[in-house]
Image 1 (cartoon, rainbow, N blue to C red):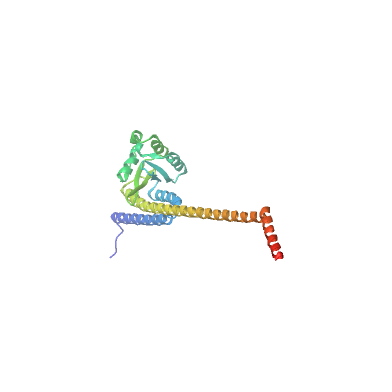
Image 2 (cartoon, rainbow, N blue to C red):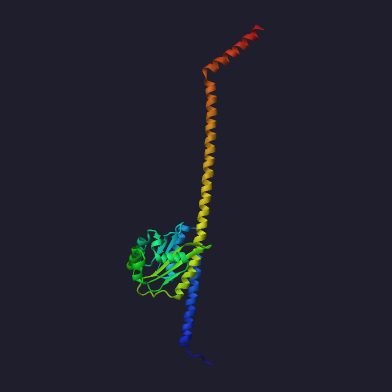
Length: 259
């Protein structure tokens, strides 16, 4: 019995399965990339921003929390368009004070993702600092998504996604879930990279301290040797000491002749 052509339902299911498979491949590939860059913290952050922007779309900014948790500093940002990237870098170059940024503060304090499928510029104007509004307008943002970076029960920072291209749809639930998984993998990689960097710095400090100690010992030994050598030379060329030694030898010779 011949089967008929696939129905619209079958085609829809097939498309959904293909999207899920593509999503799993993207997650696995991103995870491998993050782990491969763990040994180089400086390269990892731009890699994370680029991979997240490529997969979730359109732009991605990775921000890191200050030690006191009161501000965010730009770690890396990526956008597929040069002008959008320049705007983002220029506006995000200064630290973000959480006290004056309700979106970021809510994300950081609650530790829960924020989904602004449709960006409300009026709310941004009334609640966010002027440069946030400037960034949204200059890039043409129409949808935003924010996800906290967490590792070992600590907040490392926040990752912001934005869609600004007219052809890009607003973020939906699948984007939201995909971003959470990717940011979780990135957080682990960033935390591991930090620990490796701290360990290298600690070892380098210990080696520097030991090297300085050895150099100080070598210098002291050299100075002691030079002092002893100088004392010996002074003894050999001291005229009074030479005359005294000569007189002593002459007296001993005379005494032996008298006998």
